[in-house]
Amino acid sequence: MGLFSFLMLFSMIQTSQAELWQFVVEVQTEKGAVNAGDTVVVTGRVVNHAYEPTRGVEVFIRTGADTTKAFTDPDGVFRGEFRDFQRIPGTYTVNVIASWYGMTGMSSTEFQVNGDYSHVSELQQKLSTEEARKYLGSNESDFEKNPIGQTLFKYYHKLLDELVQENKQAQKPDEEKIFLEQQRRIAENLRNQAIEEQGVGAGTYGGLQYEDYIKSLKPEIRELVISQLNFTKNNFEEAQSVRDNIIANGGTYEEARKAYLDIISIPREILEQFNENQLVEEQSDEEQSDEEQR
Image (cartoon, rainbow, N blue to C red; front, side, top):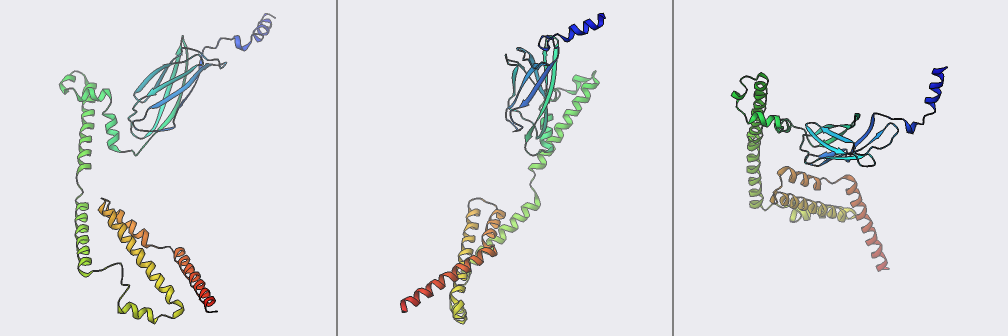
C-alpha cells in the first residue's frame, strides 16, 4: 500500500519540474567542406533532456590536435573557430564535450578538407605539431635516460629525412621529358624553316592546277565545291593562327596542338548544315536570276 502511494505521488510530478543531470549536445560545422587554410566554424546548442537551454555551459571542441573552448549563451548556443586550418585533404571528426556542475554531454560531427592528398603533405602535417618541433629542436643526448624520448626523437628525424628526400625528388628534372622537349623544339624549328623557305600556306587555292580542277567540275556543283574549299582554307588558317598565338603567349605545345585539332576537326553535322545553306543560297540566286530575265 505504501509503495503504491509513492508511485502515485511520483507520477503526479510534472516533467518540467524534474531535474535532469545530463546534457543533449547538438553540433554542426558551418560548411561541410573547406579548403586548407580556411577557418573551420563549429556551432551547436546545449539543452537538457527536457530540451531546456542552459547558459554558461563550458564547451570543449576538439579536432585532431587542435582544441578550442566556448560557452553557451542564454539560448544554449555556442560557437567555436579553428582559424587557418592547415591540414592535408581528408575527412576530419569534431568532438564536443559540454560540462557544467557535474552535468555532461558529448557529440561529434565531421567536415571535409578539399584538395589532393599526397605523401609530402602528410609528412608536413606530422612535422608541424608541437611534439615534432620539440624533438626536431633537441639533441639525441637529451634523452639518454628516456627510452620513449629516444624513440620519438628517431621517429621525427626519420620523417624529416623522408620529407627532404621527397622534396629533392620532386625538384629533380625528368631527363626523358627534357629530351622530348628538346626534340620537339628542333622539329618545330625545322618545320617553321621549311614553311618559310617554301612559302607553304594553309593550302593551294590558286594557280593552273586549281583552275583546271574547278573547270573540270560539273556546273551544278562547281559553286558548292568552291565554297567548301574556301571554308576549309579559312578553317586551317584560323587553326594555325590560334596554335601560334598559344605558343607565343607561353602556352604548352600540347595546349596549342589540342586547340588546333579542335578547330580543324569539323563535326559532320556542321558540314551538312554548311552544304545545306549553300544549296539554299544557290537556289535563291537562281530564282532571283529567273525573275530578272522575265
